[in-house]
Length: 92
Image 1 (cartoon, rainbow, N blue to C red):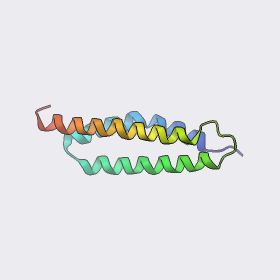
Image 2 (cartoon, helix red, strand yellow; image 1 turned 90 degrees about the vertical axis):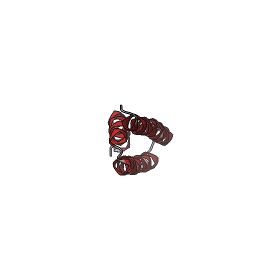
Image 3 (spheres, rainbow, N blue to C red; image 1 turned 180 degrees about the vertical axis):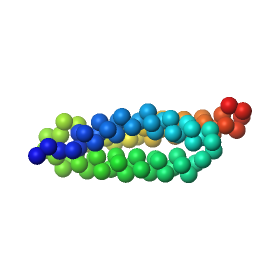
């Protein structure tokens, strides 16, 4: 049986640019709720991916890679949200 863990992991990494774009857009519009909701969805997706990788035998992607990727996406998107918030308040 083929595990969905690696597919989910690669899909999650592919979502990183979308997270960054939405974080910047939400910051420019001053919508913290939109950004926090998306970050919560992405965090849930990362948790499901980590669980799928942890259950599979000999995963092609280490479960720690999902946690490191999640932390990177959260840090970069939070920084972009903060920058967008600042830019939105100071005339872009």
